[in-house]
Length: 158
Image 1 (cartoon, rainbow, N blue to C red):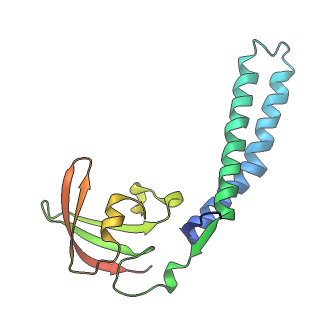
Image 2: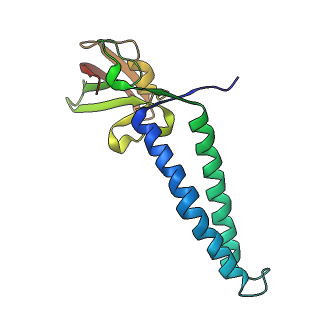
């Protein structure tokens, strides 16, 4: 049985857009590069040809990866979720108990995790520590930099 890949509807849309871009824009461009490089003669010493073939291999690999993830996608509409218990899709506001620094994270699927955008994978140590907790609870997470303690100050669905 294929394992489902949980993701938000925004994550699904982003993957779908990347797939379209790679299939309808990148693939034809790379094929053109290969044909152009091939026309330059001897392929054994043609760096341009080898670079284009490598780019093609990378692009086709990524297309296959995206198609697999989309086929196994379990799209969860976060706007229809509610409650005060943290689970997939929740946007959680935390206060670092040492530094008093506020952090806001949304728990998303691995494919759409992006710390710079405030999205962490449901499988990350922090997300695993948060699952099942409620506002007001304290969680301790062992990070590569040592143990950190956070207070949950808000749980939202957006």
